[in-house]
Image (cartoon, rainbow, N blue to C red; front, side, top):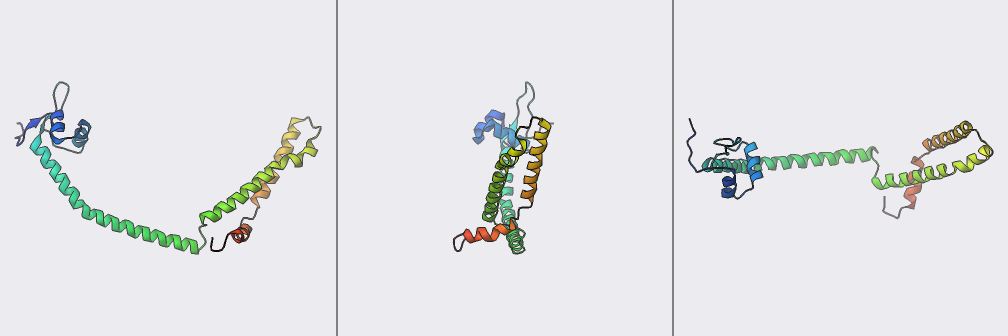
Length: 175
């Protein structure tokens, strides 16, 4: 038995034209459970009851308006979460669990400069050891030992001592 219609029966294109929407919007609404009198198949057009579709849209709009109260609650929850996160960050700073970005950048620039200098000095430190050497294995072994020495020295590099020196370089009031 066919459903009783209160509005006009229309196909997808007519519905789109009546409501001033695009065909992709009609398709999206169908996926969102918009009422359909008859789904389209090969050779058969979709059929919609305009009154049922308009009522469905009104109910969705009403539900969305009711949801605005929920949106206020969501905003209040989000605000509370932001405040909590600020408190956590404040605690982390006081406990020195975090480092200000500018301080980290200063430390990294000094460390990278040290890495660059150390790596660029490898040829100077190995040249006298490798002069006249023709054995590739000795070349490789010597260079790897020097690289390992350099990396070990860099791993022991004390970045904590940098803080006082770097902070002293900052203008008054800067951190």
